[in-house]
Image (cartoon, rainbow, N blue to C red; front, side, top):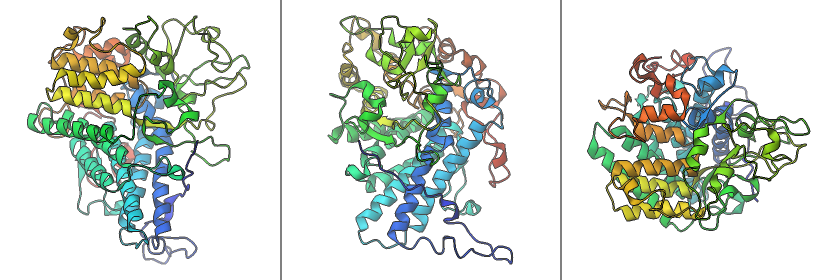
Length: 548
């Protein structure tokens, strides 16, 4: 296994504007924008600093999991901590750490990516292709930050220059749709410049396939933004979603065939043939902060081992409805869907596998409970304890199975042949030996309309991708609607039924925290998190989201 060790460059001094004044002289011993960006290695180090933000608490190290997974119908919390409750139960405190640090850390990443794009533009490189590749990666990181701001907050600035004091220079505060469109521009630039693959020493850097994948994801979110207020634009973006899924799948660089599903969440099998883009982490043994992530400590198995080691806090559980989704069907042999055991811990007397040195039965898990297993180090013995600094499992942010299911969704929305849609779904199902569709459980009549097929795809995405950061964007795309085209979603789909229920009733049946979600009151506040209150006076023109 090879892990690239990005330089942990804290870019605090890079690109900062120095004021003229007796008490604000430049420190000649520290770099600034005038003295730093002079050669290609400095630009490359600046790019490495931009990658670093992905490992901050507010991004994929901790809080994004809460805001994108625990807030969805897949998860909930029993934490006494307000920050974890706010990220899960729609009763968000405006001063919550999860709300504040996620915004702050995403914009740090955007800021550093912008520095590379802005200050590196005029730096001469011996190899022009290397410069293009660096700029492509910076465009991608900028786009990923804007994408997450759009999904979580639905409003924010899209700065084009590094210094936020220049905020009003040529751009404005953008609502969700415009943020996605700005992210799309960045991913388009990334796709032009990033290579199809990297050599072993640079595994983990952004590729053209990752850029295409995020273009597909962004197109899907834009299609959801335009559904109901501009059907022609929605169709344009569904078409684009399919186009970029085609690009990834037809590249021949990725496959799900022969990839063990559980290997996607194991440190020993990183960069496998299915991985399109994974976020790199390493155990923090050297004392360098934020090399690792904390998913297992905050969202894993909340029990003590025989040796007395507590593996996880009570900050994030899986909803039991996720397990019930898996239990709808089984393999032809009658065995359960193997993804259930790879995704969740749950009471199973038949499972004699040792998890942290003992069986699940020995933990005494209640029959109606399930806990997240993905990205936990369960193969370790009873003497091992998950901590804040020892989990180095790379997060596979984009897998090819996801791309197949996205293409199936796009084809369904475009009214394409059912056989083509099922072909993509069955690629994903066959990898885990689930019966091809149509099946006994899901006959052709179960998905013979667009609405029914959409519901089938919802089921497939739950079983394949539960607990992998994508559920909240999925719900946003499927259910949330902007009727008047102002970029602010204020209603939910009620034109189709799921198991005889409206989408909101269905969500409430799966996750009791959705009882707090009421889009008809409080100024449509539930579709977005609030903008951190400390940002409002700092960013000229930025206003609080409706209802907060």
